[in-house]
Length: 113
Image (cartoon, one colour):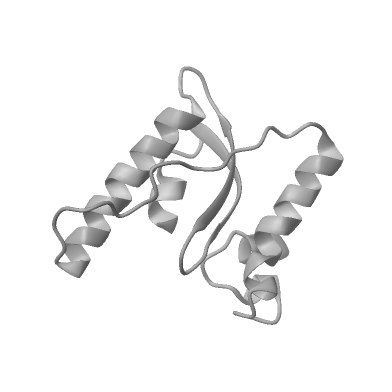
């Protein structure tokens, strides 16, 4: 999933923050013209569902939920809260004690940069 999120960074969107959880994914992006959030989500879901189904030897049936949740970022404080929420998600879920310890997140990169 991380590879899929990062693949078109700088081409279709700017990937600001992300976190892959056991049963969902968070991504904060800024779409680049002519790409829309809907087109980007469709691309991610299609690619990752094919890869996961291949690994799991599955055929048929939906892999991802049909819809997704999105939000518009209003200002810099809202942006910072969104990044913090994304990075703290595995901590809140009890999967790690510090955000930068979660291997499947941009938090580990943010600490080093």
